[in-house]
Length: 234
Ligand code: TMP
Image (tube, rainbow, N blue to C red; front, top):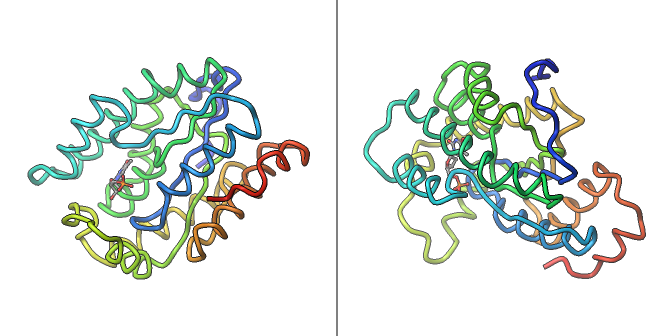
């Protein structure tokens, strides 16, 4: 959705804000970490690697409650993610952007629209509005969608050693996951200036190489800058 200008707070400071999105088990955390380290190298900026939910101490409490606690009503769930996001942006993301850092977050508001909107079947535009209010309209400069068939992603996840019990959202099944995937893809199509879509089914190195190419192009990084970080994919 294109946000009318009067609802958007001025883009903060000179920092660079990148979010990673996608279904469960597509490798977001690894790819976000690798991209953050590389962007630090090629831009010379501080890098803040964070995530939602759970990027702050309060967020960690909310994460445990929403993912591992008792049943949460879908509207309460949407508000808990929005509360995590409001606090995360106010105390960590915005201050980092204001001092010029690169902020890479593993999930941001598009996860709420996809999971609580399409997945839980709340009204996606209402869910989005709550998050825009919570963040005073802060949107990433680039959102990387790691796209994969949810069944493949589930297999990948199951093969990860030492993985504990499935959290509530991971255990709700393929139909839910397919709705979430389609919602992400629809959002990427609707807002092509913000999103890059990368096929997440390759090796970690292949996916990361593509992510770097696409993010560098979006940020307008020069070839000399990009060359500085070459050869260190993982
Ligand atoms: P993670 O495993 O990627 O850290 O995400 C935790 C779960 O939280 C994942 O199943 C997606 C879900 N989630 C939402 O449902 N809404 C949100 O707004 C966010 C940030 C995550």
